[in-house]
Every structure is written in C-alpha cells, then in structure tokens.
Length: 429
Image (cartoon, rainbow, N blue to C red; front, side, top):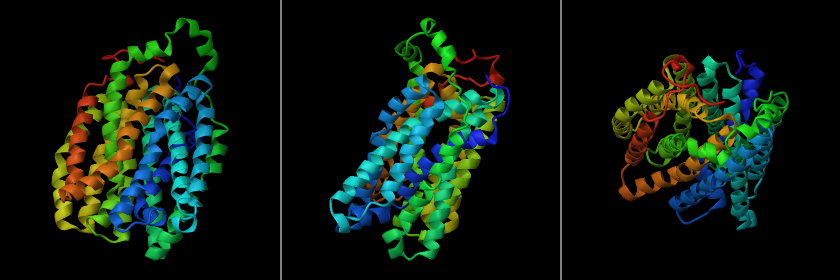
C-alpha cells in the first residue's frame, strides 16, 4: 500500500481518459436536439429527439462488454495498458463521429456510422472506468483513498463543465442554424484534441497490479468465480447503488435539453445549467471523498442522499413554477451537490470491498451493467414520461424512485474506511 501522495501528473493521467470519454457522452447529450435534426430528419421534433436519444442509448449496449474484456486485460496484464487502449479507441470514435456526413448527404449510411461510433465509444468507456479507479485506489495513501478515488467521479463533472463552457461559447457566437450545421462538430473535435495529451501522460504511469506477486501467489488464491461468489452481496449492492447513481447523472445531464424543450429557456440559460452541474458535481464529489476519509464511508454514503431525497420534489415544483434562470440554476446546483457527495464516497467503498485480482473487471462490469441498463435509457424514459403524463415534474418522481433504491443499497454496504478500521476488517488486497 502506498504511503506517499501521487504526483499530479499521475493523477491527471488516470482521470484524463474518464474525463475525455465523459466529455464525448455528455456533449452528445447536450447537442441531442441538433444531432437529431442532422441525422434523423422527421416530421416533428419529438420523433427526431427520441431517435437521437436512442442512438445515445446505443453506446451503452457495449459498455458491459468493454467492462469485461478490458477489465480482464487490466487484471491480468496491467492497469496502464488497459487505460491506454481504451483512451485511443475512444479518441478514434470521437473523431469519426465528428466528421460523419449528414443524412441529407449520404442517406441511411449516416445514422449507421453514428451507431457504430457510439458502440465503439461505449466499449471503450465501459473498459476504462474499472482499471482507472483501481489504479487511483491502489496508488493512493491509505488514509486518502476516498479522495483519490473520488477524483474519478469528479472527472466526469470536469467534462460536464468543459462541455458547458464549449456550449455557452458556441451558442454565443453561432446562430441556431450554424449550431445545427457544424457547431456540435466543433465541440466533439475539441474533445478529440485531448487524446495525444492523455496518451503521453499514461506512458509514465506506474503499474499497481503487482503482476509478479500475483503470479507467485496464484496457486494459493481462490479462482475468480470463487471470489465473485464470496463477494456476491457487495456486487449486488453495487449494481443497485450505481443504477441509482447513473439515473441521477443522466437525468441531471438532461437538464440542458429539459430547459430548452420543457421550460422553454434560451440556449444560453440551458447551457448555463450545464456549468452549474459541472461545478456542483466537482465540489460535491471531492467533498464526499474527503469526508469519507475522515468520518467513514457509510455516513457519507447515506446522509447526503437522505437530504437530497427530501428536497427533490419541492425544488422541482419551484423550478417549474418560476421558469426562471435563477430557479433552474439553484435547483440544479443544490441537487447535484448533495447527490455527488454520496457518489464521491462510493468509488472507494466499492473498490475497497473487492480483492485486487478481480478489482478492475468487477468494478468495471458492475459500473457498465448498471449504466447500460439504466443510464442509456434514463433520458428516453424521462422524455417519454413527460410526454405521456404531460407533467414537467416527471423527472423528479423518477429521481425519487431510483434514489430510494440507491439509499437502501448504500445503507447495507460495509464500512471500509481506514479511519474506522477498529470497527471493520481491512479490505482484501
């Protein structure tokens, strides 16, 4: 176990892949309306948006496959080569999507190419999260594992913030027709520029798998299947907790589309909500990880969720009633801050509960399965619920239902923080 703090370059290298990959997924969500018009021209905006969100969901189908395949590679070959592979694949897919011609130019081939690019992105992202989170937790000082693991979660909100800044800038300098024609392509290409930087940083990343030790001890260790059976309870709880977390993340990300299509705000105000979500997510995630190192994982997992669940419906009522920029931004900020405090502690809590030699693939697969099942469908379900119920409060009820399931799961998770080591058995390495 490491006792020295990680160099900044190593931390940046570990989170760059996650940040870049989430930048792409989040940018797609932000520009879902414009992308729908380019690749899925239909008779009405609802059909175009639903088709666009359907392709967004297609990227989630490959996440479990990536979690298993690249996660296995990380547990047998190393964390670093697994992260390099997923980052390069993601960068290539981002570039491919950004240069795909429109439906008007090449017809049906356009949406087919978009689907293939989304599936490659999903495969890469599904395989990146497990190795990167395992690396951060294994390389961090024992008393700071919560904070370092939380950096993985914070990176997706850094992406949200970056995407929001790009969206605000593009919406300020381009007309609506220009945003639809090529503005969204600029946003994707800007993300692809981070690829060479990330690959360069990953070249110097230390390996934390300890392959020699694992090989020497392999005869004494249980098989992967035996380890999975031994830890089935944590795996199931992790699936439920991450299902709840991903619904929260993608319904929150949907705030931009929600503001434009339901609250009928301007594009600038809608993208402003993205900025608030990004800042609130970064602060909440890091605060949650930091607190979990000092007071324990369990209280940080549970109590912010309780407060969040109590506030969701009143804040949505106020936001829908006011339909103002202040109400939208305040609601987004408070809910994201509270929700991500719990998620910040969760990365370390789940990773610490898993043995080292199945950590990468198990965390990655749990994460990918939860997101593939509930993340890819979240925005489709919310859009459908709003239309069918004719209620702008539909997202709030969906958040409450999923949040209660998540609260139940994290309340049953074991305490693994070293600060409370007198109460628990140290996690397996």
